[in-house]
Image (tube, rainbow, N blue to C red; front, side):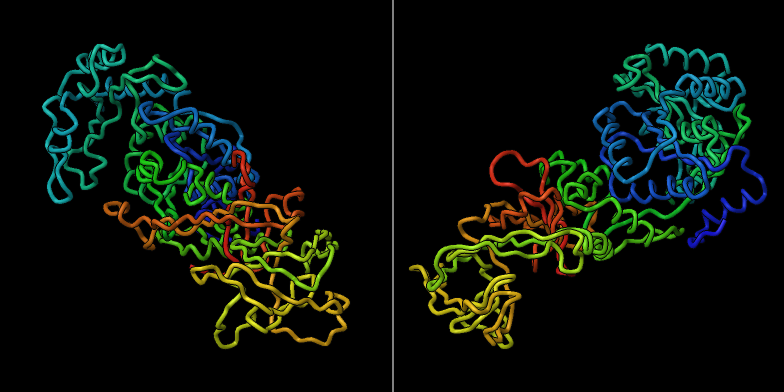
Length: 542
């Protein structure tokens, strides 16, 4: 099959297909642990696993790695399903590691009967102390030579709930001198007296991911088990497990690079801290790298898919510039969303020679006429941006200043005649003259103002709240040790703004505020003025 993307994973799949090595076609899986919300790093894995299956006419399992009931919940299960579907992918079926708990347990017992696993009574600290280092071999557990009967008896009593957490674990008997630390008698079961979100209190022993992963892949007949690079050192263990249990299928594990993104963190542990310590408003805070946060910020799913495609699939971990994600967002929104006017920092303008009111008109998008047109109320009092006026303008200033003119977008040319300040010297109002023969589309005035500014009618404008989100961290690569110190205290700015009324009547939630950026009407805002979250600026502004 012809494919513009020739990364090593697709090359492997095409090779397997050419050799008729795939009896059931391409079957992939996305196996998140339901212990937090998915982030944009997971989006890369989602796009890859679901994407290659789609490309080659295959299917993808959405499998929940629910082997640690202490950290997992149905809230996370539901959020993961929501995020995968929102990204535009459909799974073959939903499975859970817990679907296979009985089978996985039986394989552990079989390994004990074969002398390839044992029950170890060292505690976690003792196991760590005897594991050795990269240059020193580990030490055999004093319980390594328990008899088969002893091991089976203890393991069954562990399952029956006779022992407290941490009393015993089950370990594989491989090689305590292996140069790969993952092969030094890894733990495959531990005791957890905790209620599981699906199996309740049926189990109090739970398998480790490294033991569970390959077994689930084999049961589901996964054709290509795609993992991120940190699992490369675990592949020998993945293979060992499948070679030493009675399975007639052995999927290949193939590793690809993780996605890192500047000015954020991807560690679930650190993301949990941000949420638990109320450093953000929740998992869907628009400053978070979570898919829920990006969705609430107004990022379209198509932009995330495009971003993942652009960064590609490699075997080298890297950190991607945030500007690439911003570029993909702008590219998706530029031609498709309506453009309206909102004044984020209002300055009152009184047009002293204008009487009455009228309704003007403007397109929703100058280059996309299919988006239609909207009406713009206009009267003697309007708001413009404070930043569009300067008492003492710098060179080449193209906005309003004393005695100078600007065009009001879709309206008239005005000239600033008088500047009114409060007792502190702050500009609070401009009195201006308008030129009746300068109406947009019908201008016969001959005047040549230097610039164009946006505006909102003071009487018809609608108060809105704008949440302007910046980078969550001050540094591109926050350290896990100092990330609290790296948090940007000014990552959120709240603005009391004014919007043209047509913005609030439009069915779209995404808009470009002309000359400002792209914004998204927050579906979750409670009461008060409508809330618009800033999605991205019009250009690189950080």
